[in-house]
Image 1 (tube, one colour):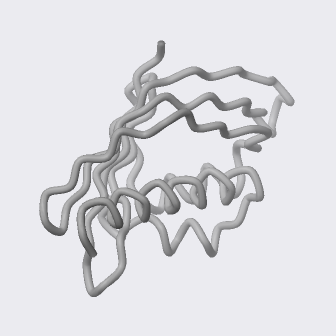
Image 2 (cartoon, rainbow, N blue to C red):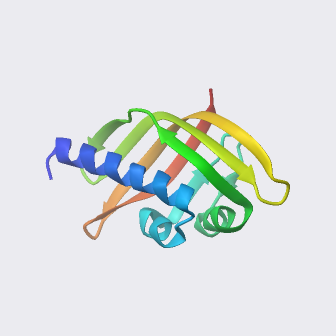
Length: 125
């Protein structure tokens, strides 16, 4: 893949990740995030893969996950994507609804021919 193709692929994968969050599609998320993913929430909480998937599966309902344009830079088998993400979530235990507006930085790595997210970091805006 050339650089433009990789950029399009990362955007496609991030759209798929957002869709999987809203659909609570854990199988798809498992394919998109690496075994060693580090997910840093806007409040500073850090999750490994198990904690991240458990949160999506049992604690939070994603009502919306809307991506604005992503800036994707490619460095061989690594891509860094930055951009705004607007989400509406509901805490399942309390039914509390939260609007989230964050800038994110994601690191995607190609391993064995497949791109996976290895790092996600969000900052409130």
